[in-house]
Image (cartoon, rainbow, N blue to C red):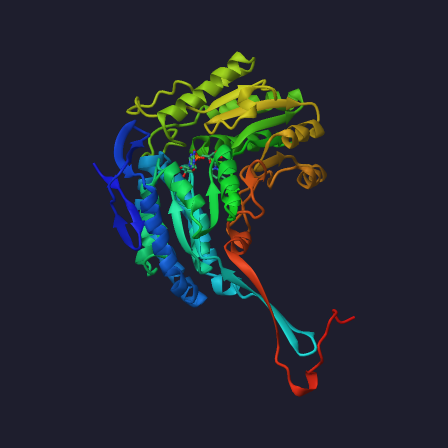
Length: 496
Ligand code: NAD
């Protein structure tokens, strides 16, 4: 059985130590093992990244960008292999894995624009004979810690831009599905990146805490659940590091009575159950305005959900695959049980799906729950499974209040034909990413991704223009070359 190592200074490292099983969630079988880096292994990676920094910092941005161009090409050439690796360990259906990879590649494309993005700002004659400019310098060694649900895309949100900006990088991927992540990092080395610029340490809390505490790490990007995001942000900030920590979500869709209900049900079907609901942008709550809208929505959803196919990643006909672990499947089923116990009605029940050949896999079928109220556990917490909750509100304002009162503020959407209502919604809703008849308003790579409230800790969002700012430090230089005519005596006050 294969044991996955680390990528340190351009080599695969197999330091002895603790290991963890990696499961194939479609079968429930152990498919391999991953090494869990000790403090000293992480320190070795940090030393390699620190040693690589001075030369990489001074490499012209256009040469750094050329590595990204080659990397993009290699990612495209190996797309099917990457999708298979994601499927084996995450369970994501091939076409969904290819979609995830495509979104990641778009971030590599954005990083190819580094020479343009790093140009800086220049002002001539800010005073007599004085010029002033700001340049954006790399930070040094920076780290990324990523979740299981996008093993290709989320790491690609981080390191292509960090590296294109001139930093060196240490990635700590999810220990639950690390193989595609490591494979992709090896492609970056093949693209011509010098050893030590990109390193991958597999591991758990021990590796993460080492990254958070080591003074050589200048900045930390984190994506994962909210309790861990809060912990990471607090510890990194206490250690004086720049940090952005993206957390969990509870994404609501408001369904207005004038919405095209067939379109709504169709798009909610994909947005709630795609990737088994294991997306931080999954729409997990539909708030229908008025009982009539709610009843029509339920009827349409029941019809649409009849065709849902849950099964193994390798069958392209399946709509979504298993959950990541047996423990997570049990947790999701527990939320459905609790909804029922607290008075909601399970309209479509995915607790015991029949999956031929997947009897030991971690499957839950698409589940629709009506009559959910804001005091229920299933509403208050992130379920992260193929479960759509339906709530009823008396008015659009009441629906918006529910969203604004929720602790998470990642994504949201309104379904309506009324432009005025949509404009009011996007203006006043307390959520970072908003869709108007668009269920998954994930920004493209040349915008930036980030929620509000307890969905993001830190000041800057992920990828896009915010990433250029996150991975660089502004330095402003003011210059004068004193010629005879401009010489002045000592000045003791700002010129008035
Ligand atoms: P997780 O928080 O369990 O793990 C994320 C990372 O943190 C992993 O690398 C893990 O090894 C590490 N980690 C876990 N426990 C730790 C601890 N005690 N100390 C230090 N490090 C620790 O998240 P997950 O289950 O892998 O991913 C799912 C979660 O991520 C969901 O909550 C989802 O909403 C969220 N997510 C958010 C976004 C976003 O952009 N906001 C994107 C993807 C996923």
